[in-house]
Image 1 (tube, helix red, strand yellow):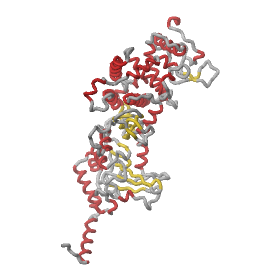
Image 2 (tube, one colour):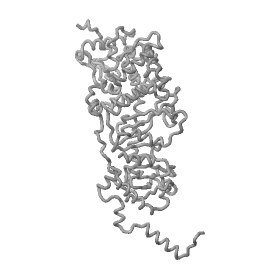
Image 3 (tube, one colour):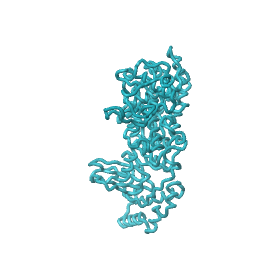
Image 4 (cartoon, helix red, strand yellow):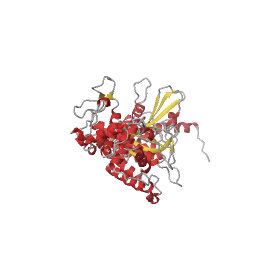
Length: 561
């Protein structure tokens, strides 16, 4: 039976409840805020000790007095004040950001820098698998060696430098529309044979690996991704996002992402250094196996996997990955999180979702002991929600739009993977193919070239520093350096006169020694031309002056003596 209260009893109950919600004294209120000393905040924030949990519980109890609109759907209590929020003290990252000592000790020129990624082990494996498949399928197959495979990769790189990734192979080898270096390296028929026979595993052993969707490329992928982490140490800010390798042909794990420029392709989870866009860790997403249920909390699993082994860093990601549970788990690993968050998350309080009646460029903050949520109004009727465990104060920038500092930091670090996609696509070596391992292999070369460029400019900061297109020059030098060893061993000259002259010049330079052929860094005007707008990259082997083709003569090593 329900009990009925009289008026005096109701007043007495309300007065007792109000007195219990308020702190008994200012001293008790200050002691519960968690800001007594630096030592207590450091241990509670970094080591996740039992005292941290107890202080967190006390602070949560303190926030029970907030209005109902500050309580989320799942019962999480937020506060509009940051008095009970602990200060953020980042942990030491444990390494020096930039190229590792292992990489610096092995870098001497652009080619040696690139070969740190495309190692001899990877090349030997590809040569062995390609020769195995070529003998089975091509009647007049001639075995491939390392120098020829390097020349093949070098031609792919030069095709990307010359913006010819979608140009037909016949056009590249044409005497009218092509370039002489392609005909000097190998014939079009040989290039087509290598392309059709290029393999990365033994096809007959795949039935034993039928559960592995990445089996045709898995061994090469593991060897390569291991090198990415070995050669570079990321800075404190990281970006975790998805990369889409364009591919429209048949593939069991092809993805459709309408917001990406390519829309169809192979999804690759990526962790990049936010400052340089160096691809530090990559993982191909092959989808779920047949019969399995859809994965729950996939974004959380991906971020934890892509940041494994790190500490003291700040991970930046979008609302596909960000969640309150992810922030809690990263804090246990001493990693902070900054990211946009979806409004339907159960931890979001109602006051942060509403936009009606709020002024444009206004911000509403909500705090817990170690988390900060901000709701920003960039235009009428629209708000942006961000969650951060790095920022613990309601700080707003002084700009015209009065953006919160959380949004400014997010905008600076969110584009690490997107910038990688942009720079990789600028000089991409991708060719049209119906085999997804080839598409992944082309992307592997593109990412290796950019990562190698980051290493090279970090080691030699003064290299062509004033040249705006120095990445173009770097890739061109890598491609030409990979082709020259194979041109040196070529027995028959090509039919094209320009290609034959190039082969003769390279072979003469190899016979004359290191001083016989000059490889200048950059391009200069021909010193014998009246046309001062023409720039050339070749110089005389005797006097060192830059000369164009019209003022150059090629002689064999026999006549030079």
